Image (cartoon, rainbow, N blue to C red):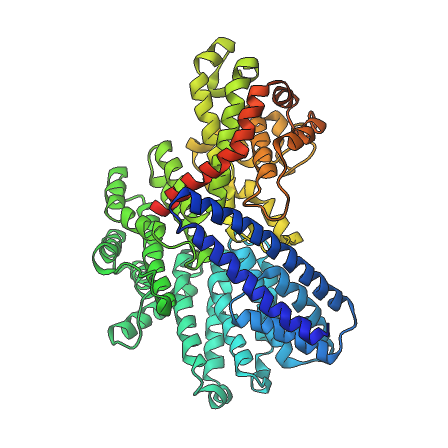
Length: 620
């Protein structure tokens, strides 16, 4: 097949497969009887395996093309492919970066301005999207470098022929101002430099002559004028001169709002104005808290998630709730509030913001809302009093925003519980030290508590996946190296989510250590020594339960053929003493009753577990 025809087919097939992936997932949330739902689950599994294979085959052909010496025609066709994917919203870090990196070298050698600006912008965007969801700045230095390459070419603005690509100059500034400065503290000192530089670009007579009448310019400048207001989150850390700049910008934004010259659907103007008033000594923190709570409880309408024509507007409303709620929680940490006052204030707005989170459909800006849900838990968790309250809320986040992880966690709980029910009685001495047990007699007395503890560990072990949901949910092709690296970070990300709360301390080692080998010589994270953990037996149980579910899952893991329990048992036996706890593996081999029970859980019982879980998700 000619390259032109193949690339045309690839573009259409890739889009169709991505759309089908989303459609199949949405349909799972609509079925409400077991027979129909089971049929759809099996259909989804078969179709996703086909999509996975077809996409991999086509990507392999594209990689072969990229290994060849590109002609001008080849390069232009590949450029058109990723430009089409970008503007149609089919973001995919691996696909985009694989093609773009080859084209960047090609067009840099030819000093092609239009192509370079777009490709730098594209890589800045894809890298930001890929790494910014992990609540850290690792990898974002690359995104910053690409955006700085774009703005370094701003003197050549009028030489860029395509207005869509000229817009990339403004978008680069926008993303440097927010979200990158919010995530990367080392960039925050430069935020107002970026802002005034982009204002100079906007006011440049040559830019106005060329694009002053273009629709994109007022839109992107409105976005930038909102972006700069998000510096209120870290303005306390900036120099006095910069705080003065923030106050001036925030007060100007409020004047424009009062005069009807701008709107504030996201609430950024009011939050920045409140912060500016506090910095200027014109409002007290308590007054701001009262005003912001009143905004949530009395003024904000509920987002209309079913309005596809105005999704961006409804996203603003969602984040008005979310960001204003986060703002209140930060102010409530002020020492002037007593614990009782904090609780009283929290009760006035917490349920409404949480309801906004939990009722958002899964397909509604999935990536952004997944990150927001984790951020909301991290912010509100210090205000919760009991561990049960915190665990339940964290479970709801997993249910509503990461159903695949929730299904997996339920399976791990059932498998771990089945193993513990037997192993606790055959090898009680291994549980000495768990929950403070001093001897075998105390282990037996506390057996029910230990079983509940194991179940709680199973539910919490993968909470770090809430921070990398885009990668977890990507099942239409093989994961690339960077994506696999992110997957390996989920234990540390999970620990980061709860490590400031001593009530979660009993679960720390399971969260961070469930991918370490039994002998401590393999797995990840490398720095964690599971062999010295006081709850090593619990880690070992969760580790083997995790592996049993992953290996036997034929519905949610399209990258591998699910094994039968007997096939898996042979694999566990071969790696007993190195990767897996030898005593547990021996139990699995010797106890035919346990084998039968686990075969049921991972086979016929899996459908029942999944269906019950999806009914729970739908009911939220």
